[in-house]
Image (tube, rainbow, N blue to C red):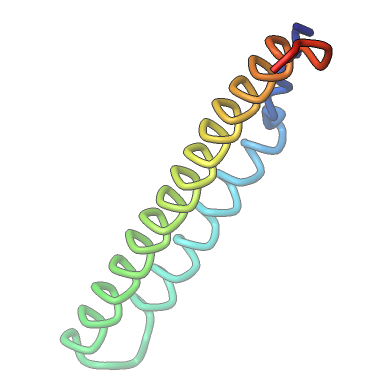
Length: 96
């Protein structure tokens, strides 16, 4: 049976930093925009709650998608191991 190595995809520190900075800048811009909006405090509070709900929903969606992808990879690895075992045990010259 051949041994295979799994290549793990890993982001660079620069890419991670850029993603964090981009998120921070976007949240800061929206927060400042809501704060300086020429509207009643209740309107600004409603928009702030909406933004918080949107952000938490986006994080939850990203986690669900990641978990589903990881589960698919695990199932694929199990199926691959089963196939390799069957192929290793198969003897085409065995009499039935």
